[in-house]
Image (cartoon, rainbow, N blue to C red):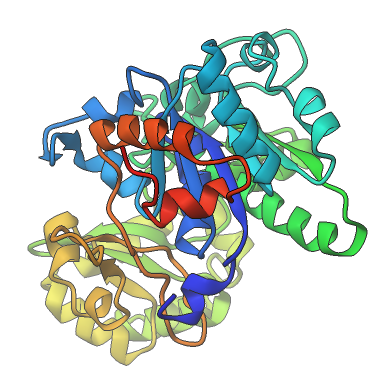
Length: 398
């Protein structure tokens, strides 16, 4: 390991039976933090390998983003010899994570009860779409379906435009993240008790968690929130306002910030107006307040308002697209874009640093051909050898 961020989980061995996004992302978080992660794929490979163009070395770029720092292995768990390799990996593993449908793991006899009877110290991460019990437990799930079912699409977009899917895969990546958080907590607990446990997460739980703030308000006041576009249910003025050339985001999350905005817009009288004095007053007149702000902002350019609002310490930002982000000086300054040590294409790195260092991308994702070869190598490793170590060191190649 070359930095402390990439050594936090050094020595932790993970078997990931992940596909698409949620399962692989849980494994990637742990791999980036230094865990030794072996990704198990079916003979056909993870479907995300085909999610292109663009492609890198024959596999979709998104697959590479979600599977760096791992060693992939192709195993057919219905095959006796391949199953023996899997069982051996589990006998050495600290963690097993998967995102298969409920019922699938029981048929393959890789459910939590079966695996943890043989290895009580194993931490078992179980990711599903709708949860492991209840009338919808067996259903498959995908990002947009869970954004719809879990309430997210009821508050995104505008009232005029109807339901809108949030662009990022919030539930897939969020479920992978929650699984990793649960596993990390379980590792700490196991260090005390010696016992593993089962961590259960689902896309549905993740989705409803994202709208937890709105759910809390609804439980209390019974008001179903409306779609506010770039607005905020609890804050006003807050949102996107059109300048003379390009839109700008203005966010005034307190009465003091509203006062600074009023000064910047040369309307200090707004602060003492009883109609706008408190956040509750402004929320009650949201349309009126937004119109007042918009009428002033349209008079000058985005750059003008960025300078003036920043001078008055009013939170504001331009609305950037991905082309802007790639060349953004702040993104560059914090070193968020990272290139694998054995690659040429930069990816967005893990959003955390340890002692000033971001976790490294040590290796690119394994090709499907290499994953098949890894399985053959695994079968040749003597029983007395540590299988994880032998595979990552590249010994016993066939």
